[in-house]
Image (cartoon, rainbow, N blue to C red; front, side):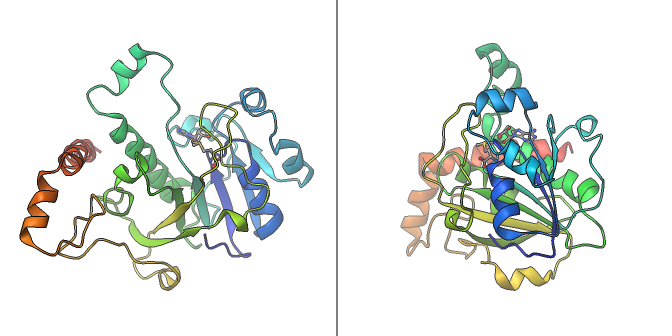
Length: 263
Ligand SMILES: C[S@@+](CC[C@H](N)C(=O)[O-])C[C@H]1O[C@@H](n2cnc3c(N)ncnc32)[C@H](O)[C@@H]1O
């Protein structure tokens, strides 16, 4: 992940505030506002070992109950004041019951709902959080394993939008001492933290592009949505297209397309 000291940063969906704390302590951005989806008591009960006090001691602005999809929860946030908004390892909270799953996800799929969360994050960040005269960058860090790789982050999220996908960089947790990647619902610390940070912007030729890796699997002989290939023969390509994995992705893409057509 690329971080520059002159940036004013907003973090979204921090689990136990350890990412924001590490960012502030070891990267010294010009400004940091940290936000947590849960209430303060839910967060401190869920993650006994959290960075709330350490961050408060550094006078960092912290907002709880911050749902990136719901403007009513952003009341005290200073709008359009940030250079970069960061969402580390986003994931929808687990459904509380089978009934809730049936109501919310059975038809549309959990995959689409997670994409929707990321798209709302990007839309709202560009419209309400980022300074139009600033860097205008949104970062999402995620893993290149199932189910996250099935969100087709590099190709799907900016479809039919006014922002551009810029590229990605390795997320090296060694650069973020004291950060513990948290499980969304439990006091668990996710150990395998290999990830990539993906970047979007409103500026097509943003200077950061040169420092990022271009999207991969984009060539003709690859399948970009499955991140597969290169296929050396027509047979390989057809075999891939007939595979369960590809068929599943075709279905996810169709559900996603149907949803963004309604945006
Ligand atoms: C896998 S956890 C990662 C937590 C933390 N970012 C980290 O890196 O340790 C996913 C996080 O996404 C947050 N989240 C889910 N839906 C959200 C929403 N609508 N707005 C803000 N955060 C959300 C959850 O609260 C949870 O903390």
